Image 1 (cartoon, rainbow, N blue to C red):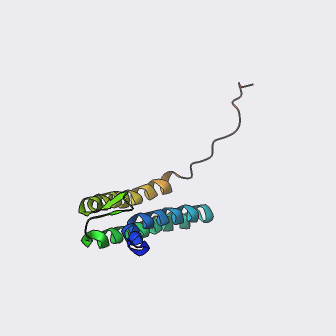
Image 2: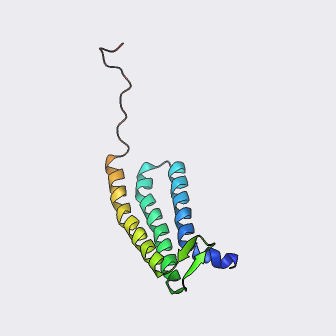
Image 3: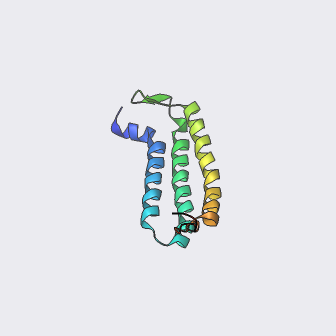
Length: 116
């Protein structure tokens, strides 16, 4: 199996990995909280959409294993679609939670009057 074939078969996982890294790095670098709350879910959904497209693209490939470690067959691809669909449905809900409850107000560092 060539490197190109291996990368093709691993493309959904690689796209999810890349999306996670891009979202993590963008979250660390981006300072504008209002824009971050608006654009981060879209960035995550875009990467998930690419991973879903890569999974559907692999549907017509014959069943095979990748590096004797991972199977690429209709059964595995079906569960990848279910997993990606679950994350896609949770992402907007988590961004709503994030915009409503985060950042939480900081706790006061002052000690109670009775403490030593």
